[in-house]
Length: 426
Image (tube, rainbow, N blue to C red; front, side):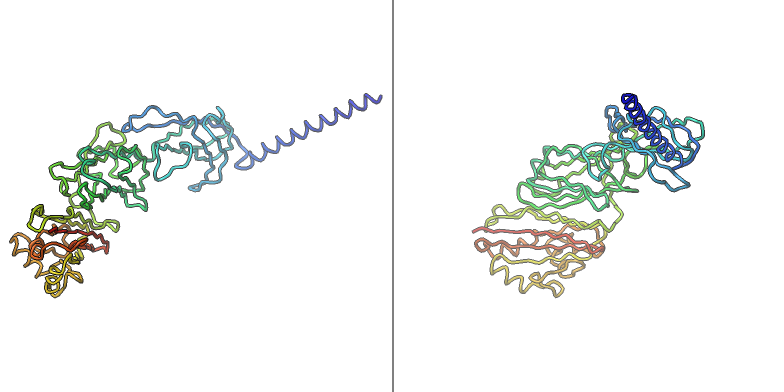
C-alpha cells in the first residue's frame, strides 16, 4: 500500500511537470502569434553573395553571415522579430505571422570606414501570406571599395619620407607613409555622392627638399565610361594609386607623378582617371606649396643652383602669399632693412599678390617674370632671384642660414606654409 502511494506521488509529479512544460510552450507560441498577427505563413530564405567583377575574388560563402528579420508597417521598420547568428541556423521553413518584413544579412562584424577585408551586406522586403510559403533571396553586395597604393622604385629612390592622404571629403582621410613601402590593400567606405578624390602629397627628398602637392581625380572623367556604372565612387570599385618620380628631375618637385586607375565594379579592365585640370573648389580644398631643396654652396658660387622655384597652387584662388626673410648675416640684413616692396619689408613680411615693386624686381631679372595676382590658382615663385643679393654679402654666419618663410592663403581662408634656407660657406 505504501509503495502504491509512492508510485502515485511520482506519477503526479511527472504529470505536473509535463503539464507545466506544455503550458510554457503554448504560452510562447501564443506570444509569437499575437506579437504580429494570428494568421501564419512561412518563409524559405536563401542568402547569396555577389562578388564584384572588378575584384576577381573567389566565391564568398554566406554561411556565417548573421540574419535579422524585422517587421514593417508602411515605411516604418518595427522591432526585430527573429535574429540568427548565421544563415546556417535559419530553419528550412520558418513560421512567421502574416505581415510585411525586411530580411537583412551581412558579413560578420560591423562595417567600418577603413577595413582590411571586403564587407558585404544586403536586404530584401517580403510579404508573408496566410498558409503560403514565401521564398526570398537576400543578395549581399560589397559595400566598401578596394584601394591599393603602389610605389615605383623611382619614387622610393627619390624620397626619404612622405605622407600621402586620400581625401574623399569626409571627416576621415586615408593615410600612407614611408613606414610601409609595400602596403596591403585597404577597403574604404565612401559616403554618398562622392564624385572626386583628392590625393595630397607631402614629402622630403633624399636631398632634403620639402615637397607638397595635391591632385584631384573625378570619376566621371575616366578614360572609359560604362552605362551601368555610377558617376560616384561606390562599393565594389577598385582604385589603384601609382606613385612615380622622374629620375632626371632628382631633388626637384617637377618629377612627381601621381596616377589613379580604376576598376569599375562590374568590369575587369583597368581604366585611367586623369588629373582634373579644373577641380571644383570646395571647403576642404586647401593651397599647396612645393619647395626646392635647401641650397648650400660656396662663396665663390661653386655648387649654387641654377634656379630655385617654389610651386604654389590654390584651387580656390590666392588671397595672399606672404614672404618673410630672416638674414643669415649682417650684410644681407642691411639690404633687407632698406629693401621695400610697395612699402612692405621682407623682415616683417611682404605680400607678393599684385605687388608692383616685386613685379619690377622680377622683370629686371627676366622680363617674362611677374608678381602673382589675386585669384590666380598657380604661381611659380623664383626664389633664385635673391641669389644675387645673397652673393653680395658673402658667407652666412656660422650655424646660420638665410631663411625664407612662406605662408599661402586661399580664398577659403585655408593656409599652407613652408621654409626655404640658403647656406653660403666661406
